[in-house]
Figure 1 (cartoon, rainbow, N blue to C red):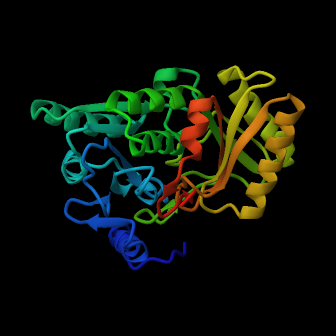
Figure 2: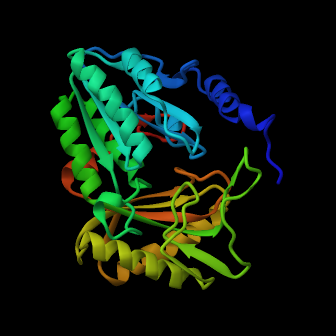
Length: 330
């Protein structure tokens, strides 16, 4: 295994230092405990939007800190939840009297540690709310669904609402609606390699793919033979549309997200097939995003996310954003 690192135990700290030096006008990186915060935080009378999760998914979450998106993000160790002290430190550095909204992916560790932080804040009289993202249709049981690509959309929508001066209740409302109207599913061509382990998290044969994988290398719901991408997209989009009950005439946002080791040319081929698939069913792709936005270290493959749009969500998605990884309208 070859990686461009200094040592397995300095991967996260070295990456944070690189982020700080690459984007000094957008973010500040704080250490011990680690968190990333907007350079202009705290913003008085503006709701703080805070998220976090294990490292290894970059640019999620640290790359989405900035104007119009996250106020702060907490990076845990590789594939490990951030700790309550990280979450609280980020909150104290970014929160105002307008309150705090936590956006939490549906993993046990993330939920537990953010809930601990919420309990502390409530005892201190800080207004706080949370939104759980559980968009992965690979698991038919809603409570067990993982938070994946829709997290990007939820963070963008909530951040835009906060930037426009929305209340904590309004930010939580639009974030929950964006989550409810989004579904994702992924496919892996190869597993990721965790630096500390120096070996793939699972093995796929040369002609095998895994449908419904998780972003930490979790097994999917089906292992099958590699096929033309049109056939793979048909299987993935069918699962999304059925679960979301999308119908002809519905407007959608489509995200084709690379998992780390998939080339841009492949991702655009995937999007081409997604667009063809939706057009054949008269589902309108009103907005799109293609690229590496929520990775799994060096995993080869992609996730597809579809969100049903309405006028309010479309306005919030289109609103200006300026972060290290997402930027438009500025």
